[in-house]
Image: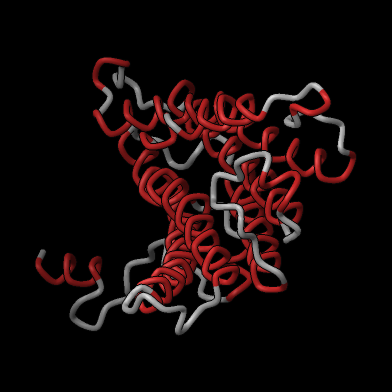
Length: 266
């Protein structure tokens, strides 16, 4: 009996137990996987990279603030570094970290499902996240954004001449990743619970991420369209947020915080 258990668990020189990590080890098997556990691990690596990038910007800010003078960064550069830190930390680390990593890994296990309901959509959301992150890094590196991570108007639409459009489009694209992830969680909880797993038997973790998914699905389109409107305003000057031609800069704040305030619960 002990020998059989040793072989089953990979001890005693037996065949190692196959799991999601060693079933296939090629790069293609990871990049094309539909296993929610592997996708969660790739999300973990990705958000960790963005966390380190944002952390480097934060360290640069702290070094600059050691003395009153602008020893390390000029005024304009400081504003860009401050904004870059906020964008990396908020949109590419804080918001996706817990749902995309922990919920992706644990939610199907907690409800007795083999995987998420839409595994291909799960992988697609990761690729969208990578594309948006790469675009944001490009915009931040080639010219930078000095508006602050909130993109407040009228500064972001009238006065700032940096890569607001590029980074704004990246945030817009990244919104699709959040929406698809939230939809996937909602569909999974509704359709893939194990027999006997009623709504009132769901773990609190699942309930929490079900609520988070509703916020992601309902709120993310608002902030994505709002940031896109900033880019449209910069290109076309249609006056959405310009009071001189009938717009309202406070409208941007209402739309932005419609999502960003409940986003603290994500």
